[in-house]
Length: 276
Image (tube, rainbow, N blue to C red; front, side, top):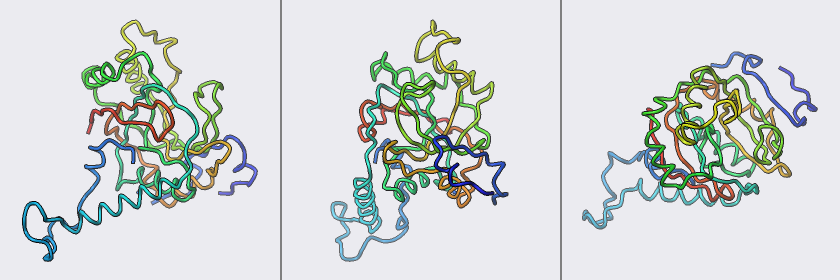
């Protein structure tokens, strides 16, 4: 596959996996971090230099994990910050991962470009709600399984895209550069979105004017500021070629409620409901 240089520099970029060769993997909720940390020293004895008391036993894995976390946070602090000011409460779909592939993609893109670090790979369901308090939104989140059920799974991505959004253009609510795995909606997804909007906006919510149709789901893996953008379609395609699990279909593992008020480093995960 040949991609011309002027195509890479064009403002809108997208590519479908069908055009590729046949391919053969800070800010998160505390529970997410706890679930992802696995000690490689779990079966080892504590270091012999420490007295075997409850107060003083510290495994080598505790020290190593702490050092790695400190280094990771230090590395992220040197990366560019996203300048756009976001708003409101937002609902994210968290897709299942294969050997942590989506999380690694977010980290790899941010590290290689020193670009803003996305708190969690996600597919946005509803952005910027300002009609609910945090407690009201959390209460409604607790009813998601009752009202929506398990979210329908996504088929393989229909493409990859690297582009720049401009606030005010149709369907664009911020000025930001991004790279994504483009996903496809279907009647089951549209029905789930209607039920989700009805849950969070009330029974009088109007299906015809209440949201953009059809839904355009995508899984964001990199962000940048438009004026300092270092992302490109070629980079995204090359990364997917080296990590072909990114082009897999996925179930939705959870839906999470975030405060997206302010800049991205201020975002806060409020609560989540697991589907898997």
